[in-house]
Image (cartoon, rainbow, N blue to C red; front, side, top):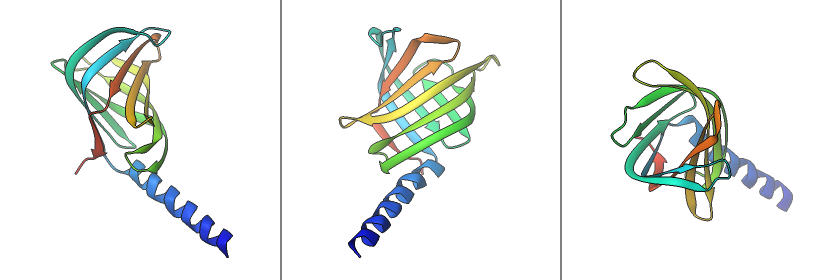
Length: 140
């Protein structure tokens, strides 16, 4: 009987975590780190960045720079505690206001109590952008 109860709790927890993946999420950050190939910080910029996404769309508004929007081509999502413990990885196509498109891999992961977004452009894998979330939540 205990095994059935444990299995039921695990299924319920996974469904709760996956439920987050169908919703629109909002991540805000006040600092952008530009990383090198070895993930060392090359430079940091104090700027308010807003990232919004769901399973189909992605947008990022970095500080005073133009907003980029795009579509999510694939997503892997696993959060055991929604917006607190887990990971989402997306392959996205981002388009800037001039119409130029770039393919990127976006990973949002909670590590040691911090939620971190890491963006890597497919055509520039040695350059990475990292945002540490000030807030990560479902967008109402």
